[in-house]
Length: 114
Image 1 (cartoon, helix red, strand yellow):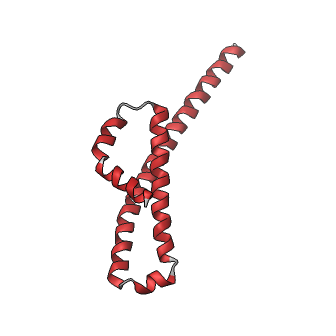
Image 2 (tube, rainbow, N blue to C red):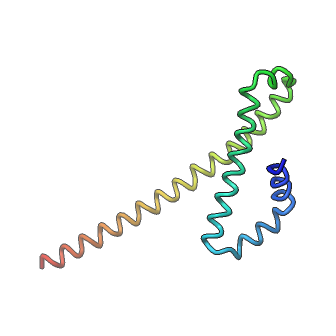
Image 3 (spheres, rainbow, N blue to C red):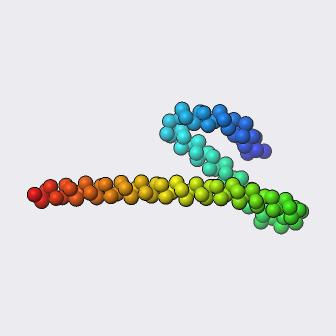
């Protein structure tokens, strides 16, 4: 039950946490991000346990199962879209940095040849 108390806290304090996030240093932001990811993983693990438990699935009405899957799709697709977008942004950034370094090295090499 402490997990659900923590979820209640996060949901209740969301706006305050978003504001506090603006004042945290990088290490604190990373630590908070890791806590959020661990919380999401635990939540998803709970859904996975439901879906792999025949007894629970047998008792659930089809409409409830559909509702859960629909919500998981909505939430999950947003995460997947963000994952794709932020990863592509990061890769482009890294490629530009590599290109810049390569050009600098080439200039240094050309200068040392002369």
